[in-house]
Figure: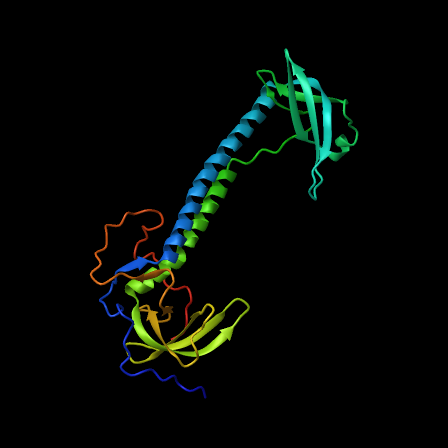
Length: 280
């Protein structure tokens, strides 16, 4: 039968945890860095969505002009080559005359067409008379980007930025409203990436709860005393303290008015608790 852990008598929580809840919490340097990274991804999502949206709209307009106003002419092949990658995509460069000017273009073409061409060969092309720089070889249909792709890519960047803030939100919620308790390390579980620390902790009611969390490079030894923070109404949601991303504000620290933003305006009910759930 597995022995019960022995909790220390007259255990005192780390300095500051005995304050009344909700506690004042501040970001550590790591937390600020993580939120800065999230802000970068959020801004990148906006920039990428706008940039891709402009490119997609331009491609759609060029396809429309070629389809509705295009005129056919004969160009001359000036160069033939293939991509250096695995696809070995064939390319052709050409020139043609429209009015008093000579225009140049290049395009991807099918391999069957490419092998029949040589430098100086004639190549039928379609161009827009009012804008001859818009042109393409006949028989080639460049694929335009779908109109929803820019928004999907931008939303992906923004979603990744929001996911980056989750560890900060979790640790902030625990430190703000979690109840402190003495814990004892019961065992280690090693994996390829890290060592998971399993522990038991003493609830306010006198019963015990169980939990586990990652330890980083130096896990506390088995049998050592640790501090645990747990959800007052659901002790299965718990974690070890201290944290890497948030810390307690100094005693007497007056919090400044908060500026709401997509990264900080998270309501108390919607803030996630620890994702690792352990039995009590």
